Length: 361
Length: 189
Image 1 (spheres, chains in turn brown, cyan):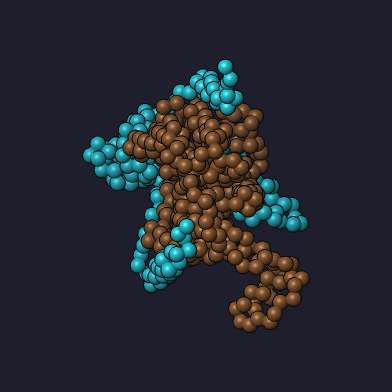
Image 2: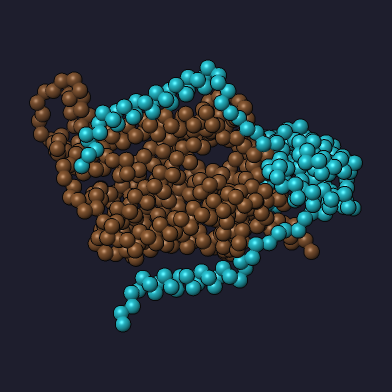
C-alpha cells in the first residue's frame, strides 16, 4: 500500500520527475486520499461494470452537450433539426451516433451490473441502502433513455410520448406533470427536453454521489465465499478502469461510424405503428394484452420487486449455490422478461393509446 | 404462528396492483378520423413506417373515398394508390398518396397536444421587436414537410474522415485490450 495522506504537513524529501510531480500535486490536492485499499477482484470485468457505466455516462454528457448546440426542442422543428444534424456537418452526425450507441451500452452495462450485484449477494447487509440507491439509478437511466427516445420526435418518439401522456392521465393528479395540461405555454416536448438535460442528470448525479459514498463507507463487496486477500490502492483500480474505458470508447466510436442511427418520419397523430426501443419491448407485449394500465403497473411491479430484494433475501449467505431458491426465481423472471421481449418483437404493432378523436361523439 | 412482515407487504401490494389495474385494463382501438386528408396522411405515414401494415392503410383509404370531407385530396390518385396496394406495390402506393395530398401537403409535426404551441404574439406597434427567436417561425414549407414524412437512414459511406475515425476507434480498442492483457496479473485474486 502507498502512504496515507498527511495533509501535506510532513516535510518530504526532494523528489524528481514523475514522483516529484505526484508529490507536488498531492501536497496541494490531497490525491493520496484516493489510494485507500480495495480488493484485487475489484479489477475484474464483473466488478468493474458499475465503473464502466459511469464512463458511459461521461461519454453521454460530452456528446449530449455537443448535440444540444444543434437540437431544437420545439415540436415544429425537432425532427428537422435532427435531420439537419444527420445531413450537415459530420461532427454533429458523429456526436449523435456516439450518444445513441453510448446510451445502448450504458443500459446494458447498468443491467449487467445489477445482475452481478444480485448474483454475488452484494446487496446484503450492510449494503441494502446502496442497492436501493442503485434501483434509483436504474430508474433514472431508463428515464433518460425514454426521454431521449421522445426527443428525436419521429413517429416512434411521438408514440412514446403518447404513452407518457396516457400514463400521466391514468394517474390523475399524481401524473399531472406528465400531461400537456400542466402548462399551456410550454410544449410537453420542451419540458421532456428539460427533464432529459437537467432534471434527470441532476437526480442521477446526486444518486451517484450517494452510491459512491456508500461504496466507500462499506468497501467493495467480497467475492462470495472468499476473503479479500491482497489489497491494491484505489488508484490502481482507477487505472484499470481507464483501460476498460478505452475499449468502451473505441467500441462506441466504431459503432457510431459504422452503424449511425437513422430517424423515422415526422410524426402523424392518430396512428400507432412503431414498437418501442428494446429495453421497453417486454412492456409492449404486456400492453398488447392489458392496455395502458398494464404497462404502468408492470413497470411499478418491476421496480417494487427490485426494491424488495434485500428484504426478501435477508440471510447472511452470499454464495449463489446456497441461495438456489432466490436465484431460481430471478432466472424465471428474466426468462419471462426475455420471452415477452421476443414475443413483442415478433408481433405486429397495435393501437393502444386513444387519440383526441376518441373524445368526438 | 409468526408472520414475516415482508410477505404481508408483498401480498398487500400484489392485491392492490391487481385491483387497481383490472378495471380499465382493456386495450382499445381509437376511432378513425372523418376527413379524407387526415386519413390519407395517416395511411401514408403507416406505409412509410411499416410497409407491412397494408390492412390499416387500406382501411383508411377506403374510408377516405367514402368521406364527405374530401377537401385537399385528389381522390382519383387515392383510388390508384389502392390499386397499387392490391398489386402489393407499396412504393407506388406511397408515391400516389403523397401526390394525392400534395396541394395540402403533409402537416408539420404535431405540437404534442392541442394548446401546447405558444400563441402568436401580436406585431409590436413600434418600439422593440419580440426577442424570442425561433418560436414565432412558421411551420415548415410543404416541400420540407413532405421530405420529413420519409424516414432518413444514413450509413457508413467509406469517406476518408470516416475511415480515420474508424481507425482511431480500433486503435483505442486495441490499446485498451493490450493494456488489459498486460495487466491481467492485477486482476487475479
